[in-house]
Image (cartoon, rainbow, N blue to C red):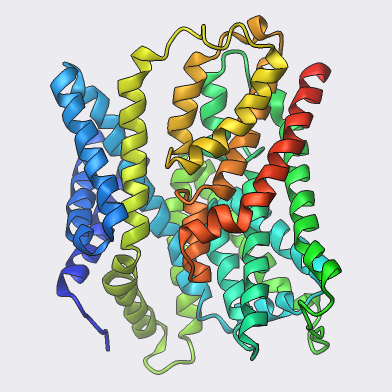
Length: 467
């Protein structure tokens, strides 16, 4: 039986799912009217959730409303300014909820729990590599869904441990391995917002031209994460007393490999057949695979797979979805605020004169640091890019290649994603670890971010001289 504490939550859950379906249809069909209908439904559902979302989330809503009123009062073209803001804000919950369905399916999978337990029982260096590369590879196809999926494995894999402190420390390290592996992927993959947006803004740049430098960035981030992961066990021999599970071998990871193959094959096939961008394909492919996964789990349960899947789907819609109220309100309003603010400020930050007198190599270093700093100020990376990029003169004026600017921006973007308490990756990490976003972001990743900024600052300078 479903435990419905607040019927209005169930209403908002149904409204969100229906609106998300409209947004997905708009993504596939390119119909702005569907986007408008879906966006309207999403904002109504969010309005129903706001009273219980917390003061900080309510402040975000207030900022968004203020910016909308400023746009309406000061811009004659305000409909054209707000339309992309509504679309971006509508896409975020669609993407978030589609990928969260994987976590829902993984949380009750016996095979995944066994795999997670095996990964948790590995020595620190092997476990970090397994989880970080898992987050990295899954992130290519699933974006934030890789954190949802593998993060669930981390939680499931440590559930059998009796020592609360040991379990908490191990779960934290596993979650960080997944997150850092995923964020390293955003530094180079062409299927991420970071590369898509930066290469569209920086004239003369391209993914093919910058990918070599971006891959080195990813290697640095993963290696640095490994150092931070194994260092505590080198300092204190008692911090982790875990005996390897001798009953299992690496063959228990086959379910992960099969799932990855299914996701890649499904998304690739649908993209080839439809011609729709990979991100839009994932909105459909991931929930379908999740439903199939849940149905397989219900095969030997009472009522069979159909009844079991229906019950799980209703629970996800009526209970789980409203429980994401904090994440949804923050992500939706961050997208809306970022897009609206960038449109309002764009006329005032054009020209590029502010950076023209600074040496090119120093500008690259500043870009690496500016992204994580603005992330701590609740600034969406997309907003930060749109605020910073118009100030930059042409790469030729700076004396660097356009691709060097891409390497610097994507390096900073990755570190912003791992350290900012306002990004989706940190919010997912906080939800899985049952901690606040401030703890999962700046506290868990503060030193890692500072070290990363320092090393990557040197790397972008070297890269600028090589290109």
